[in-house]
Image (cartoon, rainbow, N blue to C red):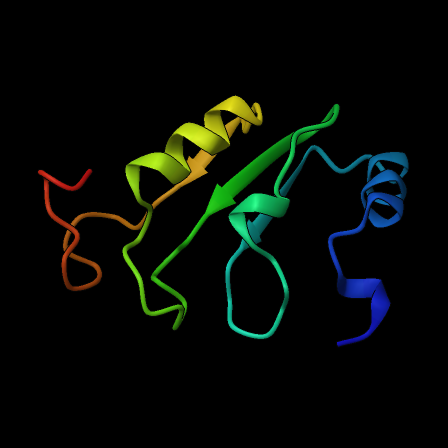
Length: 92
């Protein structure tokens, strides 16, 4: 991937200057975006795994949700019920 599409502090600042209100980061294989790298600055950040994204683990574990909350994520992204296997009312 080229540097310009990475979620770097520099790129977030540029997006903020351009008037971006929020950024969506997802954990797709090979793009080096992880829940641990997601932090909130002064724009809304949406974080999570939209559909597992080939990562081979649960959509979001309880501990990951707590970490995103502590990192001040404005929104935690999860798939809609029934859109992928395992997305149940109990999970959500």
